[in-house]
Amino acid sequence: MQGADTQLHSERSDSPHSASCIANPSFRILHPDARDHHIARMAAVALGLTLLENTIPSPLPGVKPGLANIVTLIVLQRFGWRVAAWVSLLRVVAGSLLFGNFLTPGFFIGLAGALCSLAVLAIAQHLPKRAFGAVSHSILAAFAHIAGQLAIVYVWLIPHQGIAYLIPIFAAAALIFGIVNGLIAAQFLLRFEPNHQATKISRRS
Amino acid sequence: MQHLKFGDIALIIFATFGVIVLSLTIWTGAAAERAIIRSGGKIFLEVSLSKDQQISVPGHLGISIISIDKHRARISSDPSPRQYCVRQGWLQQAGEIALCLPNQVSVELVGRDKKYDSLNY
Image 1 (tube, each protein chain N blue to C red):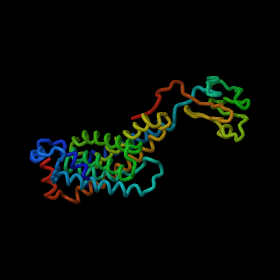
Image 2: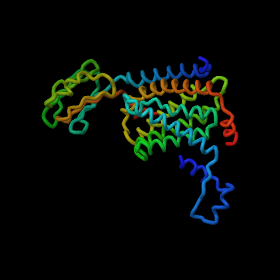
Image 3: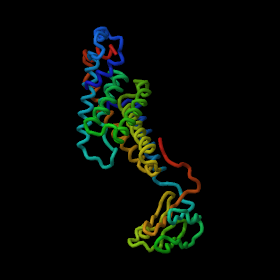
Image 4: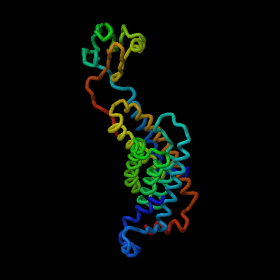
């Protein structure tokens, strides 16, 4: 999770600590703040769920529950899209390092799915809160995820129209797991009202 | 179901409907109109399925016989040792294909017009 803090801080050249770094330019002291720690913690939870999920055998490569997306959904609701994007992308990169598939096709397929679902969530979060909850976000993100993955597979790995025959299977899986994950996220959001420390962090961002 | 709001239920119904329509359109496939017969990797003949006929196709090992009957096509005889393409039986839908690899002969059914090269979304 150190990587998250490093990247977050490299964007902020005007941080109060930068003055002390000028004396010795080969050193950059990074001071992760509470928000960085929070993102890292959420990403670690997502990573744990990914690990758990990888032990479940899948009937078809690519058909997975996507349990880590529950974390993304909760973070989106509580802390906004930027934090959710951090958590989701960190999970993809750190997860690939953990499973040893960094920069392999599997990594890029996962990354494409994550980017697509984040793009859709960026729009979906503006749906009226009265009518649409975490379940809607989850379903839309799941469909976007599978669309991004299939697009990468088609464009890069298997440019054959035969993969179209798999679309209904993936779409059905996305719908089912989207609903289930959404319900879990909704249940969590309802059961655990925002604690004070967490809301403070979200206000700072 | 306090977790499901009005919009969620509407989206679930809409998405379920969408998945069903998607499955039906992709899996039922278009009606086949023509058969493309290949030999040795090159197109040997392209025939309409509306006329019943038998076609002899010279291949690597010998002659394959392709039958067309009632808008269906099959390989009725082939010199390949394991006879996979013969046992595959009748092909009916666009996109179906029978390959006799040892004899390098294949039959592929295609629709009237290829509406799309691929399906993506």
